[in-house]
Amino acid sequence: MRQKLPLVILVAAMGLLQTASSALAHHSVLAEYDSKNPVTLHAVITRVLWINPHTFWYVDTKNADGSIKHWQVEGPSPAEWRNAKVTRDLAGKPGDNITIDVIVGKTMPDRALGHKFTFPDGHVIQLKMNEREGTTVATPVK
Image 1 (cartoon, rainbow, N blue to C red):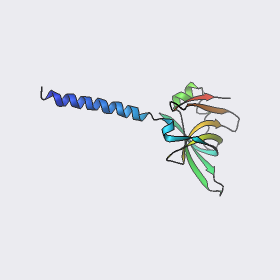
Image 2 (cartoon, rainbow, N blue to C red):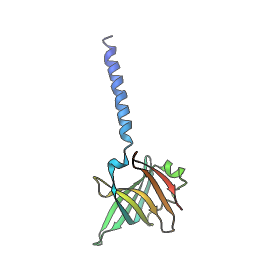
Image 3 (cartoon, rainbow, N blue to C red):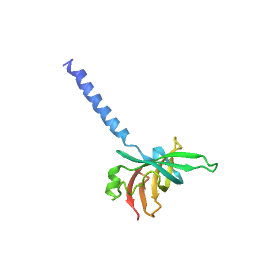
């Protein structure tokens, strides 16, 4: 019995660690981003990544002094985009102009969560955010 007790404790500890890491892997949007101060970016896309668990737009904006600011704009998972009938082609490509309404990162001011993407051809992709739960859902507007 004495030899089995450390094994039981080890298995229980591993189970707790697994549960904790899963809970931390899915983060609250409101924990990372400041929803009280939305910003509109008029930008040029430099890169688009569709990698689970999120999508990312890397965009450049011009500051008032003419300098360039590089942004990383996070979106929902590729699966959420597909469920909303949004394809990679609709999401833009490097060189495209884009207007993105975002909320900026609380600790990383060059990182943001995009919630409305407007493309030069007029199509708009809107994310609906559940502020209570800190989750988003992608829906095409046009």
